[in-house]
Every structure is written in structure tokens, then in C-alpha cells.
Length: 188
Ligand code: NB4
Ligand code: NI
Image (cartoon, rainbow, N blue to C red):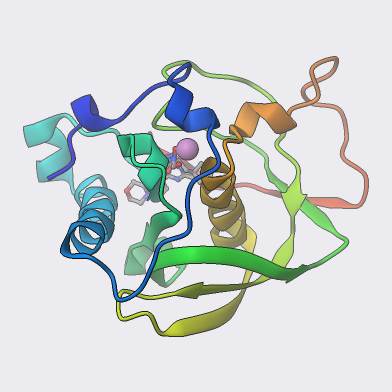
């Protein structure tokens, strides 16, 4: 299972690389990696597992964060989070997006960043995405709200982009044109 020691941190070169497309059928290694990414996210939302393995809670994690430059990530919102989304995304793409932007009112954090970086992270409010599942079957979905924010945060990791790259350096809380604020209580 993935532990915090396996997660590379800010400054590690893999976090600034463009990750490679994954070939199908998936190798046993890639299948195991994808499943372990999902396992981490699910474990990181389980009080006992958090306690036992000192995990940092998360709703998503991308392969480059465990030092594998491959285009795979997992996102998991458990049922009582009100968002029912649990996906493994392989070779994900944003097909189209709204003009309207959105941002988390509380800002964003990252398992690969061991410091709080204040500021709004502007993202698209609504996106249509496509990706492949473990069997190589392509799926398409429309996302909005926190799931859309999470998908864009993870996709950024596959392109070597960190959330703080999007924060306005001069005024981190500058009003973002044509954007909606998403407020969620994020207990991290
Ligand atoms: C990815 C998120 C940062 C902004 C929003 C949130 C948490 C992360 C990073 C968008 C995606 C990880 C991956 C949370 C969290 C709310 C839901 C359910 C019960 C606890 C969980 C806490 F932990 N971000 N952490 N950061 N990243 N919500 N929640 N709660 O997930 O670096 O690249 O369990
Ligand atoms: Ni992250």
C-alpha cells in the first residue's frame, strides 16, 4: 500500500515532468499502480487507516506523486461527501470546458506540498472529460463543483503543474472574473 514516505514532495523533478501516455492492455505493473492509487485515497478517508498509517487525507492522487511519470490518477469522494465520484482515470483529457471559472474558497492543498499556500486557484467551473478505465474502455463524463476542481488538480500533476502555479503572486485573493467560489469544509 502507498504510505506518506512513498509520496514525493515539492522540488522533486518528477512533479515537473510531463507524464507518459499509458499503453493498453495495461501491464500488471500499471494495473497494480492504478489500484494502489485508489486504495490510498480510500484509506486516507478512513479514520482507522489514517491513525494506523499516519496518512494525510485526500480526495485524489496522481502517479507522478509516487514518482511514476505515467498519465494515471485516482479520485474518490465517499458517498457521505455528497459527491458520488470514484474514478481511476488513465490518459485523461478535458474535451471541453465552461467559460465560467470556479475556485475553492479555502484554497487548495496538495499531498506533495508540506506547507499551506494561501490563495485562490482559478479553474474551469464545468468540464467534459474523457479517460480510459483499467480495462482500456474509454468513458466520458461531465463534472462540476469539487469533482471538477479535483480532476483539474490531478490532470495538472500529469503535466508537471502545481496548484500554486495558478495563484496570483501579487494578490493571492484577488477577485477572479466570472468565477464561482466553492466552499467546502476540508478537514485535512
Ligand atoms: C487534491 C485536492 C486539492 C483540491 C478538497 C479536499 C483534501 C487533496 C489534494 C482539489 C483536489 C491531494 C492530489 C481533502 C478533502 C474532503 C472530503 C471526506 C472524508 C476526508 C476528506 C477530506 F482531504 N482536499 N486534501 N487534499 N492531491 N477535500 N477532504 N473528506 O485531496 O495533492 O494531487 O475524508
Ligand atoms: Ni496534488
